[in-house]
Image (cartoon, rainbow, N blue to C red; front, side):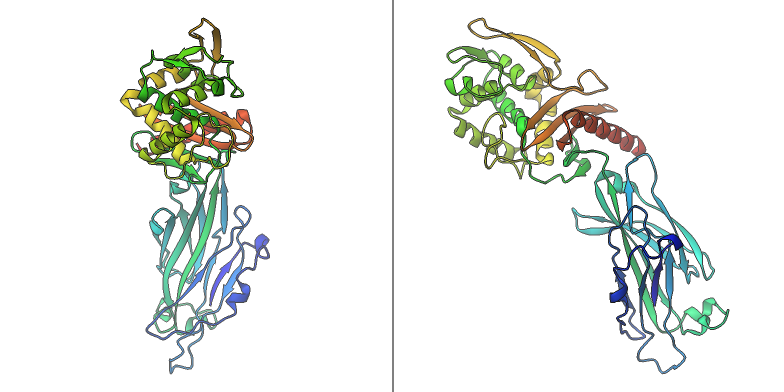
Length: 434
């Protein structure tokens, strides 16, 4: 029998495995039966009680053989973490112990493999405590699964009569292998999806639903700005079409007027002007639909696998979507590509006064509330009804550039507090590695 026993106050907190536990598992003396328990996610640090039956060797001629019992107490079925500066531990009690090896693993969903973090050896007594120290892997994603695995115990049952519990009595036929899982949740941000990416290596420092598709809203303008800069010089004059002038939530560009590429970039990246983005897209692609195709081609070139653009500005429309990972790739390109220096310089401006070809004056203010704080250097906000509150931010830690993306934060201010939290997490994890 294998028994997981919770603490006294939690002994009735869950019985998901009790029905299954009443079924015997047959095995021979040569083959250890594997009994695997997957604990369902419960309240933080809850320790449900489970019991699994395991028969002794069915082909044994020794009538004294009785079921072996392994008991583990204190292994939580779930952890809910918010403070990334703390180390996560569990202290378990194992019986019988007698020098058994306890191995702690985490599951990597990218490789679909269990990775061993650490090993422990119990004391040479019948019952022993083991302090499990969990790796920091849980700090890099919102949900992490860990498990412990112990070697089989063999016994002829004689040690369970009276008070006799000798190590030698654990070394005959009848075996059980113990495995149990725990789920750790870590949600330091309110955003529905989020990532932190090393801008040079594209390694993800943190991820939360990194590949979940959402509306990119005005972060779309990062791609529009890239293509505008790649196709024209900064001094090139763009004619404002009627379609651009009539695009809502702009700075009031007038049809028939002109605007330099440099000033269009200011208008797109600071106040997030939709009319400026539309004008840029038509100038580069000849039409909004043609420009959208160019945007999608460039996104694919940059490694974006779950992004479809339908317009140059990011207003909600049928069929447009992206992910936090893909937007971080685009932001990383802006912050590292040698020919994107003008975009980096413009994104760091808090305000700018620009003029159109006909002398119209526009005073622009950045929507980025983090400019001027810490090492933040832009990049782009986004807000739509379906997309919610989003932000692609760029900052440095120890001279290394990182790009973070939050999509679907709980409020306009939350997208910036979420980004500051992610920057703090990045600094903490980088310092921990050095």
